[in-house]
Image (cartoon, rainbow over all chains, first blue to last red; front, side, top):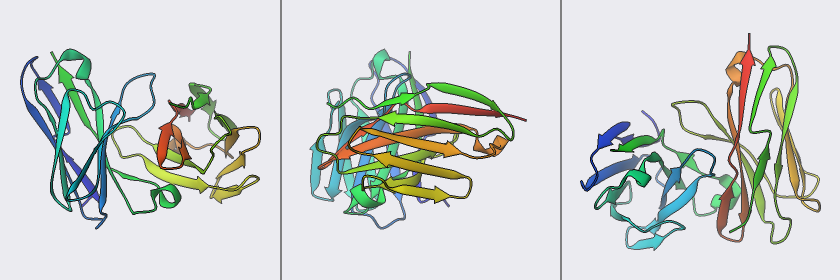
Length: 114
Length: 110
């Protein structure tokens, strides 16, 4: 099994619908992140969590919310999806010193909002 | 927000050729640079973490160098193989912030 698992892998949804992307990890890491990847842009941070009681906004949090249900689970919600939220979404985890060891990424969720 | 640039954006090489590409970044507030390898439909995987000016790292046929004074890192692949086809991402770390480049997409033609 993958260290970081994202579900679903692909999703098509309609404008205005609420959608949740889920992420679970077996790395035992405290820190979890949601990133978004768009063509021609680098990965951009949406939200991050350093432990179960800690939630922080990233660079592009508007239109998104998150829930850290347990150390191993971190979900991303789009409250009312819009077409410009069509993107590839990555969940990632890290040890506390991510600067040195980097991220462990999931394999991504490709979301299309029509 | 810092600008991390990768060039070229995409690259096609013949199997057996050696190749290299560049990650450029502002040199102020440098803490570390990461290289990731991202195969289509898979997770990006960490290749190298580089922290010191002059660092050279190697993993098999892939190596990387770092120049923090002039703000660039090179990734080299010697004798490219089709399995090297992937997007190579770099990320600049300053303090607690990560800034990703847009990646170089490498296709190795058999």
